[in-house]
Length: 507
Image: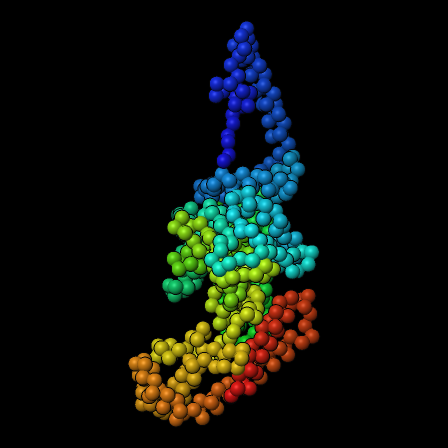
């Protein structure tokens, strides 16, 4: 806990201590205290004179609105740990500026100090829990591994709710101060309620990160912020040329992330508790871009429609075969457990989302999930009807597997589409058989029209492989320095190509 002492406490004349010894007069003691106060006043005046005018200082949180939300409510262990862990970052004592996170791309990530800070804040880590990096001296890509064997169901890490950024708590914290900004975001983002809830929850995380960034090393989360990545490869970070090299679905998803960032930029202008320095030239403001990336790539959406960022817990990598699952108790504390027996030296990973759509993972998080067993078959149908959805038209169900297998939903949708041209009666029979679970009728219709659906699928595979060749050709001869995300894009396209080639071999 944090103790607060007054000047009298430090002199030892409170709490029953420091009673004047016999023979000491009260007037003499008063004169001594008065002299000390005078000395303190002189020192305070000298320090004040050393500070420049506020107009020359970096704008701080609330610069545009003194009636700002109080975001300093945090547990004492977190405050105490922050004071201990930021000593090495502070400017010289005479400087009016605090230390701020340097968000330059490829800047050193101080993960070691963050790890110390987390421990000081009360984070509990299992024996063998270890942060590791595979990206050389800059440590651009950190993850978690275990140095000891772990049995299934073993606790891995515990993070208290006071350290966690939760969108619902931030919403309560900001209250009316963010209402205008959130209203603009809702108007810009459309009317799809489910998607809008996630966008809004990310926006609250985004605001909180900006607020804590502007506090510099006065933020209790400074050590964590200073450990985070500066470079990203997801959809929001791409250039117009990048989108030209992406297949249709991936391009749409990546552009969606960029539009989301633009909407955040428009909305945050109405958040008066964010400084003018942060919101000026906002679309080219690196701080705003960085805060957006942290909010969207390091958060997890729960079943309660709350998005959370768990410091230290956000260092788990993703895998389709996750070794760890994260849970939240009734108080909002995060507890992670192993989901299987894990051998020493193995990675500890969680599942970010459905692994059957690596394009979505690339668009949002900026990496290629090579552990994914399948990918969307890339059959893009405009104006999808409710019956097509019932038949299985969904990005997570219309799958091509890496071993060449094709999901049942692909065949169902292709047959439904084929029958839509002049065979409406048979299409109705297929739909009703599907909805009623009449497997025999459905199988008979598939058997009758199999040559047609097989030809349609072969044509689709060949056409898409041709598109991938054209897209990859656009990147030939381009400078990686000018387009640093191009290698990842080409790697994604090749992953899709290899899956399509495997399917072609089985048709």
